Length: 524
Image 1 (cartoon, rainbow, N blue to C red):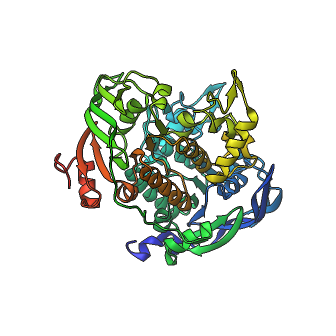
Image 2: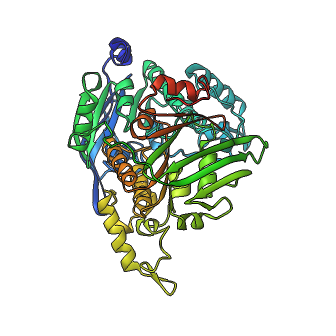
Image 3: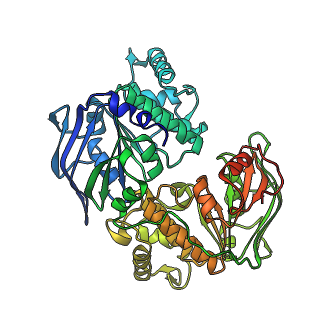
């Protein structure tokens, strides 16, 4: 935790002046009360965390504050005066900005164009960008948010996209900053940088609302934390004087185990065999994956660890059929699949929890029922003579919704786009795990999930392992890597540089391998 005074510096330095007050906020959607008479106050110069399970109502509450939803009941006050916020434009006029969980950027616009979008300066009908550029560069320098204003958003990293979103808020001189799951898609290094930026903003007197599932981040950066469960406020606590265990219990309503309980592995036959695999960049010709060789056996969890951008995504795309290979071999159950399509690999027993749940995991405008049979709709149980059996599909979807605790307003008829990010992830995991795969490729399976859901997913992965499945896991979370894996493969610059036993290697040693400071030999 470090120095307590350092932790609460922004909280103690600024007067406890309430800037936002939300009273008895209620928001209903068809079939569900997302927010039920919630009270929340935000003070100048503080970082106020909002904690809750997936689908608890956190994003909906912030959507009300940002004008994306209109409350059915309740009052919002800004600096003591009641206000009606009918749109995000209204929210901006009241000094409120928001970085959404899924960024709201135009990918073929430049960084600068995205920042000024909706707040452009014109002269004689033409955009005037000189002053905007100067202001953006001055703000980026002041807050340590260095960007290239002329880069297209499609060409920059996720971390840079988030900086662009933050600069959009600061460019509009917003005093209330809402961060909705800001660390869900960031690397550990980017998360550290974001925490530093948030503290600096609070020190300047900005009021920050921070939605997160990660208890260690909430403990590290926030001053107070409000907990919401199933649409109701459970309480607001002083974060510094609260333990992660008590926060998790308030969030899910029961004690949560932070330890993965599993028996020693009992590896069987080789299920996945990768030999001499290389993948080259289509732009530069440089190898993104270079001469990778490894196996994954029945009854074991093998985890690929590494700093994001070191070839993990390209390796997984090659294994799952989302990307082509340049050389090497991929076998599933002894059958060569290197040149086969995704469905053929599925027939061989492969299931895939993808890195990008919205791009590769779901059809966002399909309902939940259809998404849950995407890999199986052609099976005899779900169709006959080419016609879908809607009744069977709905029954199957309803069973998975209950089994995997997928929170959705309209059951199988819920449109995927209308679900929270965490529940979208639960839907993908339900679909893939229920297929009883021989090989389960899971990429960041707990990204964006609350501690209760993470505990459940870890239990399911261990259960699948114990049933004999071979599991290839990719994770950026070192705690997850160390606690759930049976073997660790470390990637650096496209190469597998070490194989480690999680029972014998330390966090520090693993970090050295990930940064290429360790030996390329086995690590225990």
